Image (cartoon, rainbow, N blue to C red; front, side, top):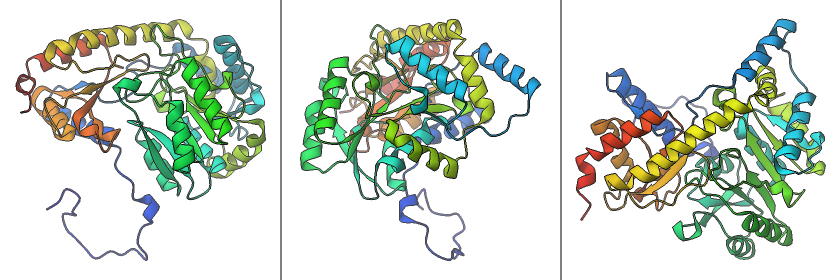
Length: 403
């Protein structure tokens, strides 16, 4: 019986078949999380290096801001684009961090970056349009456009490009594959690599010359190690920037993010938000506003991630995993394991079963080449990283390269 076969097949009672656009692949990292939870329920201790979720809590200033507001008023709906004071605070953030002026009116508060992607796709593209996305890349870059009737075109990158698309890739996709836009993250998931400012500038110039939408995923900004990230807004007012409080601000479960859109797009995104979401969670918006006052805590968290990154970059080669492009930011390492397997899904299943280390198979990020890669997340505590290295060093699977 196949893995997807029902245990007790019955005749469907649905009036019609489910939509073709709903038939998207599983988000594999969530499956890994479920398997890890099952192992823990059975009594196994699991070291979590699979999920891109900070091991730290929201800053205390976020919690204090929410407590204070809840003591003063009921938390009803906000306007669709979000609390004016939060939009103004994000505008100030761009001035302070990037020296870029972004009017608050161009900022829309969203239910996490996921809602920002949906709103961007709906506002910018028509059904059947083609969107260029990096490969390897965040799996929802493929699945969400499919569910909305778009096609995706992979921008195939490699270690020689530091896993980042080039201007020539965009130009070729525009002229030979008919793309209407591109979505790129820097720092990237799953690789943690970044575009230097010059490459970002040149990619945006290609998009402007070829009349392409440029969507910049900046969710990992704030988490960089020795290299300063730059926002796409430094080079163009016609791009769409998507960001979130999930990563740097350690607020994944609060589901709160923002997008910056061209002035001409604001009313369109506002109407879409009104109809699809009404508005982002008011409680989360209040907490997000308070989070900006927690910089000391947030920078301390970033320093933990940097220690974890350095520990894994030094330690993974010692256990036989030496094919790594060092990450510039975020909290991931994308590791070539092709010397040991051509099935990263089975490889990570064995890693979980045999040594209790959870990691994400590269197939989640690259359906073609990901069979030979594994993503390790170093978002957790440093002692977890060290213990994971110890266990991997004792795993006999890594002492027997594939022949």
